[in-house]
Length: 249
Image (tube, rainbow, N blue to C red; front, side):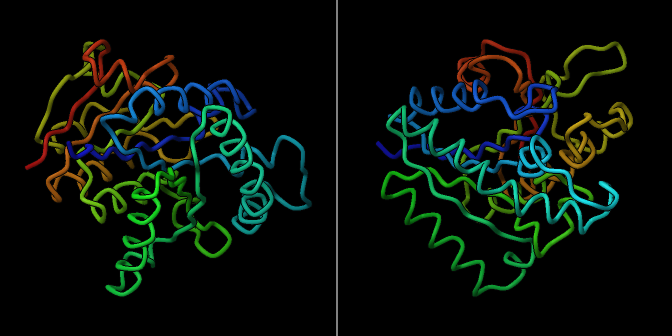
């Protein structure tokens, strides 16, 4: 039986559990879920968090809001973030591989093919790609998306069966504060989302809707799931939690 392919996008707010520090417990939670699902699913991870890791032990001169400072922090934090994934997943007998891309890698047919070939080779050999924006050469995700767009572009490139975006809410709420369970018209959601972002993340729900729109046009279903809950992915797949499902066109 061919395994279904899921791209899981994890934002900084999920990895830090709303604090200023990366939670190894949350990384372990993600690994345990992948282990439980691996007989039926292939997982690709797009993960933020490099800047948050660096901020835990580094202070650089200059304004923390300057792009060049954030890029430097990302360069410092990325190896540490990857080490957390590698060490935690290795204890679960899961193999990981780091992949750093930028939006430009998806604009050229040759580089797109190279990206796809690399990721498919890793998956076919039992490795879990852990993808992040190459922040040292690109500023788009730092400024606007927290890897949301990168996740959607990767999902489209790999033609995944499902894009799951871990958020700090149970999906998108209507004006009564209840989760909107299923939607196809993304524009109808823009009037009910709140513009606020988490303390750690940079994307917010607006950038997730842009990502969902990219996936939708590619015929891919998107789930907006509360990542703070234990076993959030497994529970969503088993219909044991509330989340927003954006149907493809």
